[in-house]
Image (cartoon, rainbow, N blue to C red; front, side, top):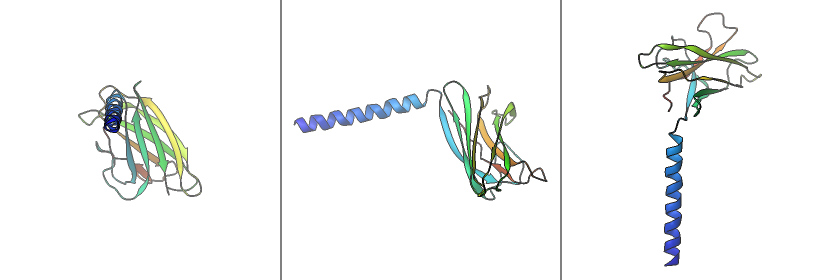
Amino acid sequence: MKKLIAIGLVIIMVLSIIVIGVSLAKEGAGAAKSILWLSFDKDDCDGAVVKEEAYGFVILNTDASGKLIATFALKGATANVEYELWVFQVNENCERLLPYGEGSLTTNNQGNGNGSLQMEVIDGAVRFWATAVYRGATRPDDEKLRSEAVVLD
């Protein structure tokens, strides 16, 4: 009988921890991982509209203070070059909101690189996407890596 009571208490404690964790997670913080696709199409409300090849990912995260943090991880992109990093926020009418987040990273000899940027979440923003652009591009759409748009808490 004591074993059943102990097991019951453990189950109640585990369920309580899960419920508390879920409720805290919904209080102003959210994150989403999105693949960075090579895309030669224009930006739209969904971010990457054409998915050619995957070149890593970006994690878009909001914190309770209203900051948007974008962490980029490029994999197999152009080696030994600098990429401009951008984050776009759009409202429910699919209009881009200013200012855009901007940063940079430099890839190694295997085309891998990491970088991040922070910015305020703009009032009215409902979707977010990221872009990494090779600075040595000769055409506007050369080596433009885009994520799909995500909704964050």
